[in-house]
Length: 261
Image (cartoon, rainbow, N blue to C red; front, side, top):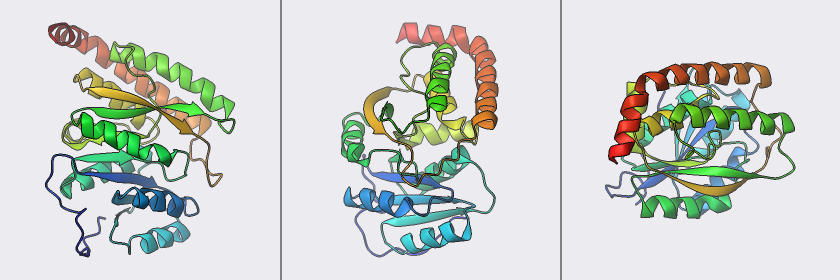
């Protein structure tokens, strides 16, 4: 359910400019970290779309309170969709509201929001490009997740027929909304932790320009992670298998298009 409340007059909603960014934050039970994340983005003068992915009552109440601010828009999903489903709902809402770009940010505080300005500046300089973060971890990262990421990197390189994707899992990105929403409306993408790598591979198949910036990542501000080690790794493995066969079918066209470019 998308909220349609009226907003106080603001130069940041509904602008029709070539570069008009917002932040999209998928939220599932991160009521303690979320206000810190929203305040940091507010200080960066970035309007926020909070996608409540069927959170608990306590988290929903925090989202409702934050949504009283004119800088914040709330989208409420009645049934949990997973991270990818929540992000896609937020990206569609961002485009509907007239934004040109959306910064995807996790609600748990793992992303270093001091990097927001650098990512937005890169998007402003190259508005057609997808600006992607590749992580620099501190000691808080779980070793099991760190090692599993390397396997995903290899499969992303294979399935994209390119070494250009530096990290398929980091969800700190600035999406140009027009090509991204066109893709998510045309293809059935994974709705959980498989979303982040799959959308990069499918955009690479379409020759989407990408730029890569380093960003610091720590796990997590409120001590709560929704990554399910076995279930999500199994889901990601199935996604890679699906993309592999899709790559085989598309390989001649992809390689020919890149050769022409």
